[in-house]
Amino acid sequence: MRPRVASYNPWTALYWLVSGRTVGGMAMYDDANRLPRDVALELWTAGSAWFSSEQGKKGRLAAGQLADLVVLSKDYFSVAEEEIKGIESVLTVVDGKVVYAAGHFSPLAPPPIPVLPEWSPVVKVPGHYRSAPPATAKIGAMVQMHQCCGSCGVHGHQHDIARKSSIPVSDEQAFWGVLGCSCFAF
Image 1 (spheres, rainbow, N blue to C red):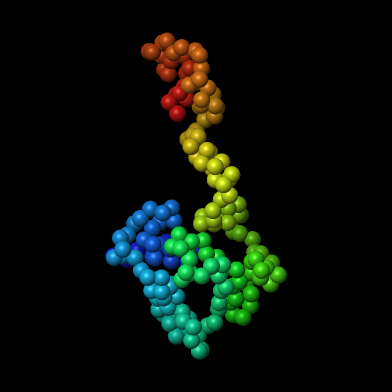
Image 2: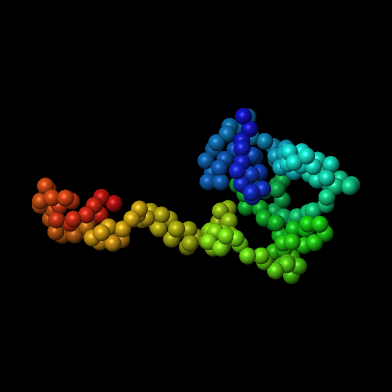
């Protein structure tokens, strides 16, 4: 069985095909179901052209075929496997026109188009593959560790107040004792 990839990001897909792992790093496939980098790239390019019945128009570097191109941030064939999902285009040319440029090429960039829908998470966070700076990652871990599924009707989001309270819960028959909530459990 070959892995199936559900992502519009080609580097996420190629990482999955090559490593057999999810974006989070969980192993999904053994070595027998992983592809060499060149085969994965051919499936993504020439294979996609075949799937759309356009193998004579695109998918290969050949005379008479469409010649869109990208300049990549890293060399797909030489980076560590984990780095594949972080590859980005620094220059994208479609139909002879620059449609995206970053870094050294940014003076060539066209004006950005708005992200739609406006509420999309990518408005704030450009991509799941980008590593966060250490301080941000630490804050994110703390937020995740202390997340709750809802506020308490008595204490709001101060769930720790019940646990640290000096009030004894003496009436075991009452609903959640004298504290009146389930904060202590969370």
